[in-house]
Image (cartoon, rainbow, N blue to C red; front, side, top):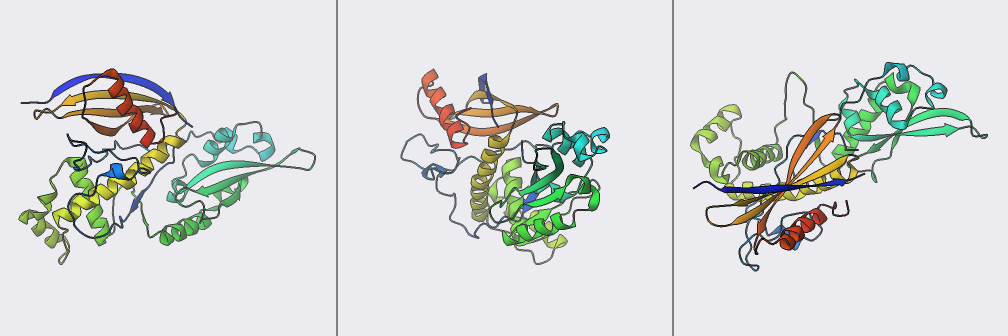
Length: 323
């Protein structure tokens, strides 16, 4: 018997520029295995799904967040602004100057930083110089900001790359660069576990799929001696990824400068378990993006007040309830 799909409703909200992204691996979760992780509702600081059992005291697995890919923002190229001197470009907005300067520049180093513009003036207040400030997105407290005069934008990214690599190394992270012609992720046990967890979550694969003899044969053929994690380890990794990715999603929407639309949809499973899907939709540079923010297990009668409270609690966990 197929699930019955309920109707939806939409709400508009607005927030303060998303961090253009790169994928960071590996995932350094602890090895191991205690089955499903404890319910995330006990961690009040993490934006995770609350207890989703039929009884308030029971504890079951947390459904992972499913993300639609968000494309990196494409800067609008404007050679006319880029060719101007600092004084002549002074009247343009910060965003126009930044977009004109970095349009078409594809170094992965730029994705590691938030780029802002500082306007230096003479003692009498007259325009003097435009300087770009590169602030680390992942560890701004431990990674000092880089400065570069606007007219030296094309002088190379050596210092930015060195700073980025040192920052990632300090955090125990690796930068995965995806080119147009190939996508290569270097092997490590952590990277392998991360890919397995993501595959299970994104493609609805059972955790015990790693015990498939043909999968084990494929892994052994490609990299002899590779250890395949136990299903309980995969389950634990998925829960840890859910908690960490939820924090990134929370920060992303805090920094987003466009309007956000909220859509909700009710679902009833054959076993009478009811869920409320919370979806966020927004536009960026003329493109529509969508994310399934959360699936909420409904435990009470579906009154308007109860549904509104569930949605409000979800938005509060992600730090966007005030919008």
